[in-house]
Image 1 (cartoon, rainbow, N blue to C red):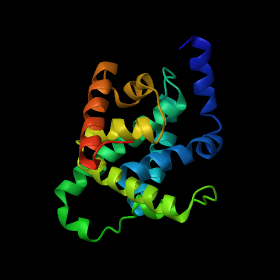
Image 2 (tube, rainbow, N blue to C red; image 1 turned 45 degrees about the vertical axis):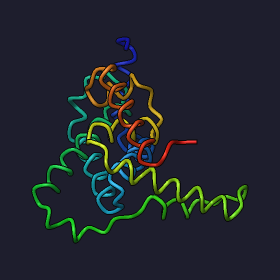
Image 3 (cartoon, one colour; image 1 turned 90 degrees about the vertical axis):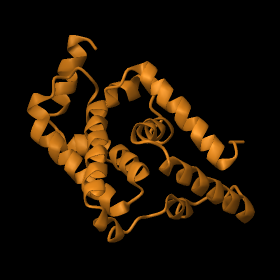
Image 4 (cartoon, rainbow, N blue to C red; image 1 turned 30 degrees about the vertical axis):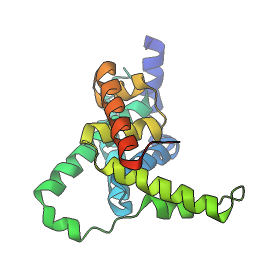
Length: 184
């Protein structure tokens, strides 16, 4: 990243309301896909934006604002998982939203009802397989296939080496394919 790009990224933080408007949907989409719990995702979106707002003065500009925000969100997911493991009794109180329920709310006039049922079923199987991945595999999988980040962007967002990202993605895909019987 050039000096001009860094300065531009840092200046971008001056309009924090604009940052929220522009990047909130992506952060929310990532968190919902990672957690599959609407309440927890919304809470973490707010926490992500709050942390970014508080830390905006220390943003160095060595990455894009979107990468910086996703890195905060990835860390929040890790923290959330850690807390859930320590407070397992709260898991029964959390109401989770199935990704398939969200899928149903998306209008699709091009496919038949049977096609939509089959697609929902395949999506449900994929997400059940994703649930069995390790935290790092799941993070890489979601950033690649939900957020459609390139491997270099995933590496920058997670702080992993690109080769490590590739390894986690390869293993995640193998596990998902195995659990759902291969992707067509």
